[in-house]
Length: 244
Image (cartoon, rainbow, N blue to C red; front, top):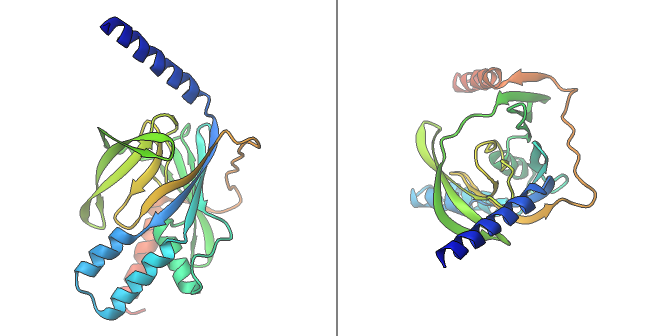
């Protein structure tokens, strides 16, 4: 009996691998929740004005939708074009910048990511190598849509504090992509990503769409390294702190 069970499981795994190997491109839409962020802030007894601002931020985030498009070893992740998430222009831009600082282009074959963002009214491509992340893979499971996902945990320093990042990835979709810069490290597509600021959850998944997927990397915008971009940001912080 054990022999037959082993043969059955081996066959099932083989079929899954064959089907997974046929996934060459796709599109994923992510919804955003900032409720955990709001609750943490609310517990600290902030002034009513700050509490109201945090509540407005979390409510606006509910209207945000981000899209991941992938093709073989490349992907692009960005806000849904033309989608406004708040009637207040400043709040719209603020919330969008919290959950995605720009448009993220990933090339796993070259181990490279470009973040297309704006600085002082000018657009830049911020180029960086995909960082090796020491994820802990667990056997904990949950269903997201029709896909069985596994939990992975990452300890990471963010803003000087150690934080726990949680990802739920789907081995059935064997591409190492996910929201923002969480790419290239997990054996499956991230369908849910919990960061300190927000949780990204796949609300719609389209695999091997009929019209296919095309990803065009931007080439007509000035490119700087991640280190240079950080230096420019540090300069701005210094100017603001000095009252300039």
